[in-house]
Image 1 (cartoon, rainbow, N blue to C red):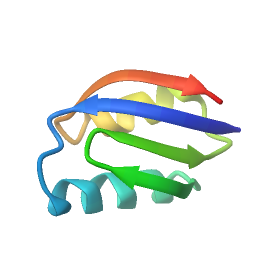
Image 2: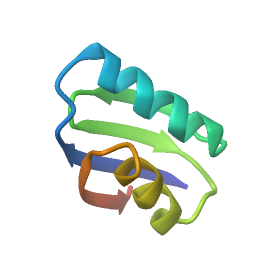
Image 3: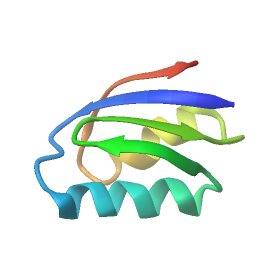
Image 4: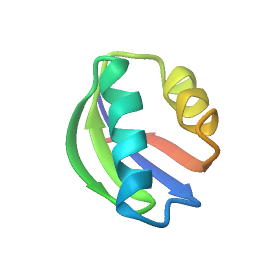
Amino acid sequence: MKYRIKTEGMGCPHCIARVNKAVTDLGAVVIRMELNDFTIECEADPGLIRSTIADLGFDVISVEEE
């Protein structure tokens, strides 16, 4: 499934890299990643995606299926 994820708190390229690694570790393919707004393709449960990003210290505003 394809998800668009909006967050708060990602303020630099290092933040992007941390989130990128975390979601790819879930098996996601990153389609587009910018500060606080990115799109991935992943079979993981949206709740798991949300909690994985939140565990890094970022606020997850939404995880919406596209």
